[in-house]
Image 1 (cartoon, helix red, strand yellow):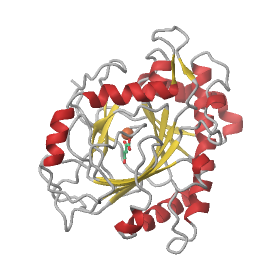
Image 2 (spheres, rainbow, N blue to C red; image 1 turned 30 degrees about the horizontal axis):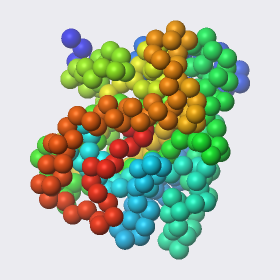
Image 3 (cartoon, helix red, strand yellow; image 1 turned 30 degrees about the vertical axis):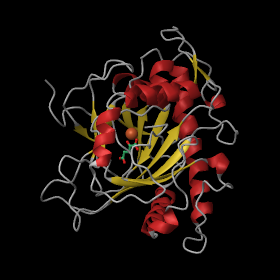
Image 4 (cartoon, helix red, strand yellow; image 1 turned 60 degrees about the horizontal axis):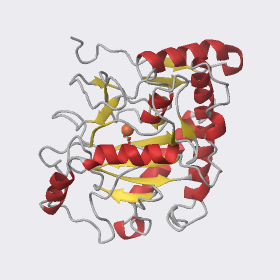
Length: 346
Ligand SMILES: O=C(O)CCC(=O)C(=O)O
Ligand SMILES: [Fe+2]
């Protein structure tokens, strides 16, 4: 039996991409096929400074008063907006101990982006620029995976146009609350175990803010089989943690693995400070057809895939969730109904 820490998360350098592209492609494909999680480092962009700046803006946003943040509430149909302790995972039936805001690039001039110029003048510019840079590195990784699956190099990049009106790619800023002044209620966890429904997730963490763990052992995307061996993914500012989502697992006929992961609570004796992370969920445009070269699963549009995944995950336990919400001691803002957060990426 493997034990915690025994499983290595591959670390892949993108240094000298132009000359080392073939070598990098093989490393990425190997990691995606055999592990499902890998860490990208030494990318030109977003640089460590870009990432630090995005975190600075994110922290400033979460420091805003709730009445300002709640002017951009979570909108389920669009998968955008701010929520606080309102995402309930099927694995726990309890709200994740976090707040988050989700943003889509093609909607950047509509009200789903917070208007916070008075408080954070650089919000719009920094976050839009960060999305553009993260999109670029994502497309490099997706082209490596397309080649590895025997597809045309641009097979995936073509369907991931973030400027399209049909785009579903989403940036999520996350803030897990500090536990120095506020204890996490019994049984609750910063983020309950889940897989991401999207295509490919790129996650940014900050040194010293650990807690992300992955759980190998999922057999296929329709299976909820989980082992209970968790492997920590150490947080390092500047690096990018990548994980395969359910949609790419399906489109690869299960060759690439979408793993369960979670964010555990700080243990006694560890830092109880807040954790911030930034997730970039690559998702194909709504009408893209998801089906692998071996046709293991019937064709389905990206939009329907997400709806199905949400249904599969959230149909079970609806009653328990309603009860948990009713007996919850949390005070939710009036415009936020806990339990309605069925995020279309994770
Ligand atoms: O914050 C993290 O480290 C993980 C977030 C995550 O898994 C998600 O939002 O899907
Ligand atoms: Fe996730």
